[in-house]
Amino acid sequence: MQKVFIASISIVILILIGAGVYWYVNKDIVSQLPATTEGETRDPFVPLNRNGITAENPNTPTNQNENTEPTTPSNNASFKMPKLRQLSNTPVAGMYASTTKIRDLNFSSTTIEKTIVRFVDRGTGHIYEANDSDLNIEKLSNTTLPKIYEAFWNKNLTAMVVRYLKDNTDMITNFYAEVRSNPNSTASSTTSFEVKGKYLSPNINQVAVSPEGNRIFTWNIENDSGVGYLSSFDEKGKTKIIDTPLTQMNIDWPATSTVTLTTRGSGFSLGYMYAINTKNASTRKLFGGIRGISAKMSRDGKNVIYSTGGNNLTLGLFNTNKSEFTEVMFNTIADKCVWSSIRTNEAYCAVPNETPAGVYPDDWYKGKILFTDKIWHLDTTTGEVHLLANLLDLSNKLIDATELVLDPKENYLYFINKRDLTLWALDLNQ
Image (tube, rainbow, N blue to C red; front, side, top):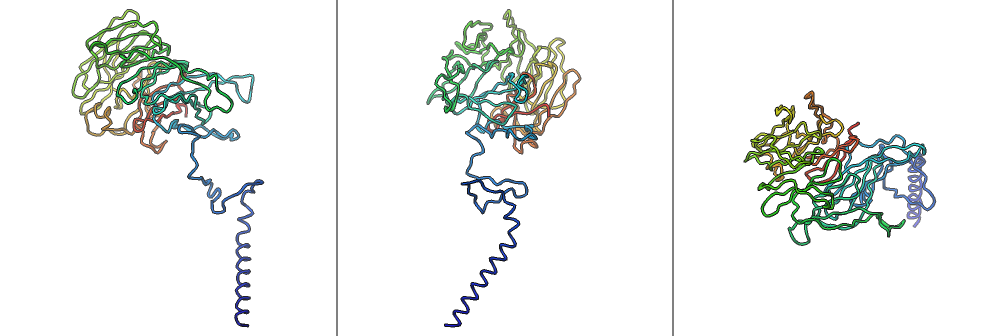
């Protein structure tokens, strides 16, 4: 009995000694932990700021909703917007950028320009807005228009033409939508805008927005013919400017008085490009006999950047005044380029690091081939090209950029990743 008692005392003494050693070794670490506020609890097994990395709860979403990002910390003077930024986590149907003036938070007597971009979620039709001053993505409207795959905005971002699939069918519906202030919105409501509008002609096959952003050119299929109309976004003042047996065309409205029609490119056939004068409805052929054609005219109508396809992919320039062709120092599909509106002799293109064997542009359109791109700048006057961004290095993601758009001040280049249809923004000033 005495031996058992002595053994018990020895065990207790050893435990006390061990606890004292543990406290002595860890007391400096404990003293360095951030103090908790009243009522706050902390999981003792979560590392805090180890090697400068803050632990995150894997069950906490990084975004406020399916299309939002954390707001920029207002007290972080050293914060800098990323050069390349992902604006959506889900597929988008279309976007447009605008510039507005706001009061400077530090100097209320002065104003600063703010670039905003609005886009539509493909799955829900909800409208979102991002800006260049913080990382916040704001949901403007929760009006549901499911299965939208195209959206064409006006200049003021107050109205758009959307094209979506009718419920349980493969029929395309064309709809004019106005983004209006929601009269029922409250401080606790999630959105401050609502979408109202009307249905448009069911014959609309394609839509192109004017350079001024206030009118549209629609390509309709009527009685097995291609018919082109000019109108306002809601189809008021509709005027026919072309009626042709050709139906498989790609349309664009690059210059104020010029609409272009380009036959849909295929590596198995020759294509042609035409220009229509919007003032007198006259049509002229620009050039043709191009296999796998894809083409985009500059904002002043003086140049066309075009690509040829088939087994090889090449890029070139066509001068509309001199009818001359010149080569470009990189190769891509012209659909992956956008012309500057400020410097009309310059363009930006998404250029693949490599072009796998295939038939172009067919295999790219079908998604059989996907690219990993860099963004290049082209000066058509000098022929010089400049590498602006390696998208893989900046994002650590595979990006096949398409539907390129510049904001009015041309500080940002927006594009959609063809791989997952997410929206991205590239700061051209960094």
